[in-house]
Length: 433
Image: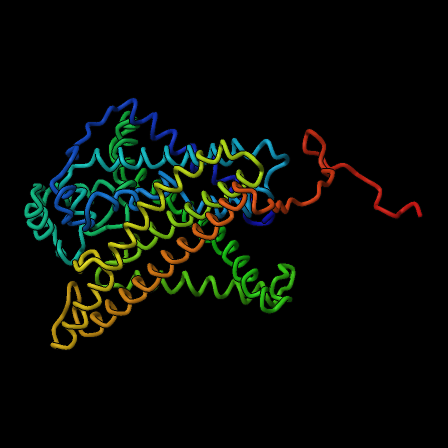
């Protein structure tokens, strides 16, 4: 915590917040036109080239962290308390960070909407649909109902210092291209050709999010595994026990490493397989956080304030479980994981290729990935249903008075820091005797 997270995250915070604020200033100075239509036909048909499915509920799990972040609530519960000097700092750090996260989402959507729609779809549609050349990509985008010339696609790639921008899915390149165009306009007085510099600066800026997410997520995942296994084998629950730390950390790294490997090698394009699962998992974690918050309010005798967390919980659970239903039971292979699995199995049995697969091994990879994603979607949905139902049992028991509140607050301990954050030197207990 003090060797890696605190100093590294402290410095990266200035980079993150500073860059987003500069982007906001750049937008205010350049006033770029929003080129993306307010509503496209894909919003009603659910057959978009970037993402398939109805606007409700999928828009809520696509714009995930910018609206409500379960991952951040989970990380904050184990990290923030170790980085603050006093409890009053939690509000500005926790609530302020979520406001900044929402601000990042708004800036990212503005940056994407300022791009030529043809360029946007050429970057975010599957590479197998677009082809390998600017000519094939231009033709595919024209089929979506938008127009972009091969020259425009090549000029955009040259401007950001890349060989090609075709099929650069995932959101990060889109944000980087949009940011670089805005920054290049602001710094035009320094000379032409700066867009490539700003593009790679934006890519570096986005990498900071990945670094902090991976190490903080691994740390919290290690704690959860140790706590879970510790119920069966007590030594494993001790976070100071090195073998337990190593084993739990290895399991978490192997887990996210597997999904990274599967995403990179997914013939369908990893972003189309992994992002819906990420969005659902993140929003279900948010439901857990809101459930815990509601329970704590009721236990503290503040029932009149419980609606503050209960209403967002009801909406979040309804939206995310609906999305889970679609991903599990939809008969459309573009939406449902098991529908995609069945279609791929049928193709394999007929010695045919499926989707974007180029050979039989690719078809088997699609079958494996869709199976894993479908099973995990079921597990996630069942887990949150159990959590909410069990919490509701506690709520009704407390409200009716049939259950006594059990508050497990840690006994108060005097801080070893003064009001200015300096360490107070105290004589060890029992030293005089």
